[in-house]
Image (cartoon, rainbow, N blue to C red; front, side, top):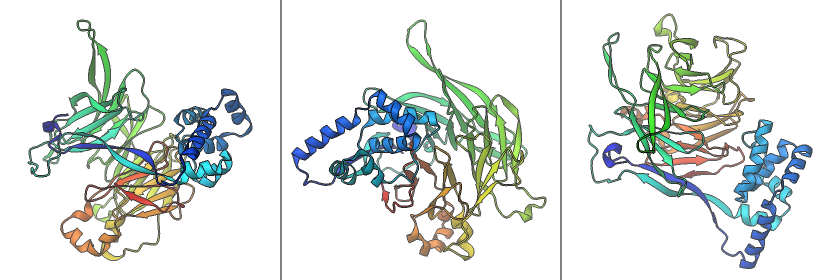
Length: 458
């Protein structure tokens, strides 16, 4: 990606590795332990079938966790393919490292490979040029949205100019290179409100089910578009050219700016939300949408909260959750009510250290995400990130405080509007780590387990 297309603001990529912190381990012991690792990693198909039959998915979860801790990627992949047949897509947080030790039966090897190895992040790749001495001009394009697909093979980058750049991971060196780029949105004028609708890409979502082609959805303030991306072999050059076509345009259903879009696990529908409304769309029908949630009161002066984020459950097509500016997460079940005016669950933390005028500002949830298995929800507000068990509504199972040092500066943050900054959060592919953003170009990651108190900065 050229410097001009990135506007001088680079895309920085990092990968997670492990390093040994114990420098006193004898070389002979290391060689012995590596041999033990090889023997432990050699799972035969007969053994796997017996484990599946006698022990079930819970033991396989522990084995997969052990393989991950031991860097046995091949064995972990084999086990996970069997685990998905049980409907298990991520590891339960109740599995502790002591259980890994009991399963593999190698105490010394466990201490060397697990306790002495800590995860770290290293620089991987950067697109564009980072020159801190140059000031960014106002008319230069800047990145407004990023999204990986489910496999991690593609990375879509959206810009304030309405352009979308797609990067693809290369098989040779695992680096990401330019795959294609296209114009997604153009600036429009809303005659009802007499306001201009910017072309800036606010959201990008990849369709989770892919075949011979990839589908991705882009969104600006008012319009949602679905694009199909595929390779077509040219008859003249016999080379595969990347083609991008606009399949659907969904518009006219939101009076306020769209803040979330989420695909359903049924592969047929998705939701879009704004400050007061959540709409359900069919992917093949772009001229009508069904309103699931509408919190707009008859008198707009009676409005006490707005919708900040919404998401479908990753596995149950009938369950959705949305967050509000009051720091509340509401979960609805479409089997009970087609209109989610009655909620099946409400997640809220009654006690808050911050009171008075700033309480609602700092407790406003800016983002929420389901874990891959759908058992947990992570939410992000200005000061903290919370992990909720969907079976426990009273309080989160873990609260990670990142911005305690800003509590004494809330007045200054309010005057310069920094208190209204929104931060996103996300799970990693196996729901064992959480990532969110902060100030000073920092990313913060932690474990969702309530037993793990560690939080790291990158």
